[in-house]
Length: 286
Image 1 (tube, rainbow, N blue to C red):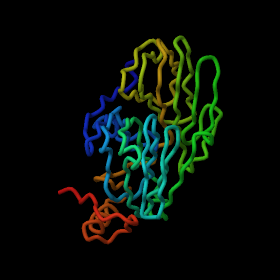
Image 2 (cartoon, helix red, strand yellow):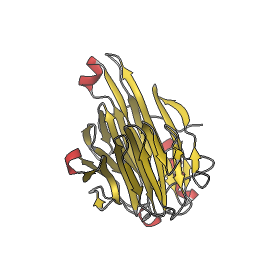
Image 3 (tube, rainbow, N blue to C red):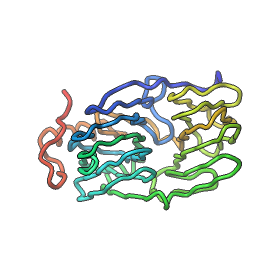
Image 4 (cartoon, rainbow, N blue to C red):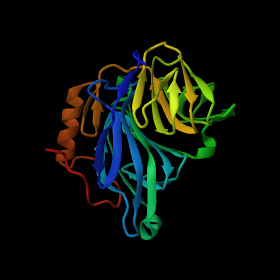
């Protein structure tokens, strides 16, 4: 797999929640529009506790949260207040500025819960960076799927495998959940310029080379590959068209560093839309 770039994820803990973060890395800053990839690792919260990500800002990106286990309550400065369940898409377009919180909902906090999922950030095209913020929620039944020969595909966002997701991406995007039974195989499409695979669970080969468990394999442009399952396995495939260089500082993404500098000043000076009912927030680092 010499042509494939293997990214080893960084281990971090965010407000008590362990994560793996393969993207961005020093070797690869983005894959298509994807500039950030967090694997929210399996974590059990005892009764009386839960995830609590306080009010914080974003610009120039879309966040996409996709849970595998557990629930999250999303609230934002647009007035959205949405319970997010496994298999659903929580999609927030930050545009020129939005704030949000994510936390374990009260019923699960009272009795204890388990959380596992993925959160990615997709950079916005330059023409959309300063557009209005928006939020959308898409239930599992609205995401297109296909199933054949031991391969189940759910198209989370974008297009691929002759499927198209209703999530309103702003540039060519591929984000698919793949589940293969032992012995099944799948040709990885070449229609998107940049692609990467992340193996969540199981054992799989890319052509004849093993994929690293919970590592990201960035594929060379235009090269065909076959994914083969050695056991029952679970992966995601991301990709799309590159958007050009992006600067990312804290929760801000932009093509122009001046936009990030302005956003930092606005947040520091409390000149930012607030999430209704929220009084605490995460302060600007440093």
